[in-house]
Length: 192
Image 1 (spheres, rainbow, N blue to C red):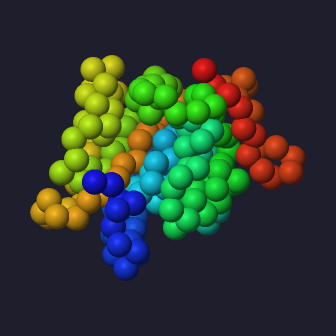
Image 2 (cartoon, rainbow, N blue to C red):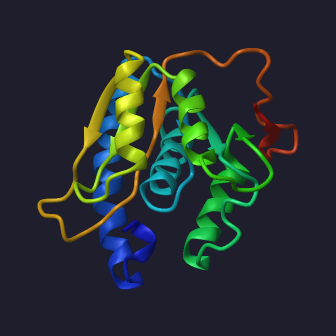
């Protein structure tokens, strides 16, 4: 069960609580010199993390970058409007948007996550202590690659679900990346 299944009356509370925990970790790694953040843009904590990164960039750390990794162009096509609007707002402000493929296929989310992690030196994940699957595989893969991993577990009990935020990187952006265009909109490119 993901954050998209929470009633809208609960989203603000979870967004704020999880957002504060994510921001604390982001500030720690920024102060260690991390300046490139990669996010998978799933509903829930991914979007909340991306919005926190943009807020931190705007107010405190203009040197940080947000790179959004999409498993498919159609990722948000069937999402509820409550998630679509912030999703597209984040994509418009990202320094780079990379897309794995045009439509969803089996395994594309996991391939997207592995590509993000291959380019990353750290993983910050938010785990709900309930759902098994994507986050567990991401953490296992990161650990098998020797990627430093930090898991935020914001919930006291198993009754309140959340989603995940994926990776941050110490690596500098290479010259092959297309960064913010002159119009101020993100440059979108197919990555793999």
